[in-house]
Amino acid sequence: MTGYTAQSFEVSVRKRVLCALLAIVPVIFAATLGNLATVPNIAPWYTGLMKPSFNPPNWIFAPVWTLLYAMIAYSFYRILCIPAAASGRMFAIALFILQIILNAAWSWAFFAAQSPLGGMIVIALLWIVIINMLAEFIQLDRLAGWLIVPYLAWVTFAAILNFAIWRMN
Image (cartoon, rainbow, N blue to C red; front, top):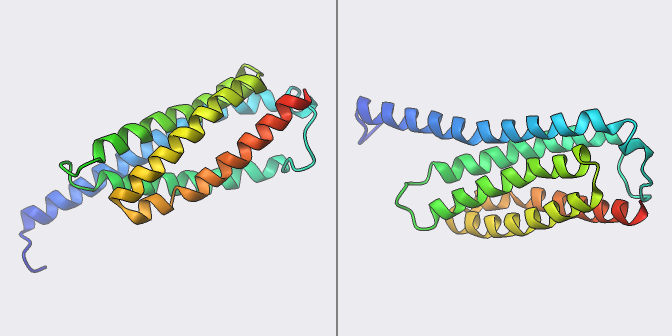
């Protein structure tokens, strides 16, 4: 370990552990809040709604979201590990926090409030924030940005599905 002292190595490890915790906790919190709003409202409300032919089976959502949340957390971890003085880092962090709040809020608007229109409003805002977050992340760390692309694709699909459900019901 050329150029490292035991103390600098310890600080680096501590910083990475802290960044990992700061990246994982909000994602787990959002996922948990989303589940609290969603699960009790699947039956009979959601199952009773008319849905388009492209609506995926319910079992697909858990593995997709698990993978997406892991990618989102790792992407955020990479941003958090960038030096604090980096231009645009704080704005990227603010966008991440806003999108993770909107991510959880969608479940409460759509499922808990049983409002496809409310869900549509939240997901439109979420989509805009994700686009901006992706642009900021790419500027700071190319991989962090690319890790957000599948999330954007899924939210785009979810918005189309949400819109169809709203129109059909």
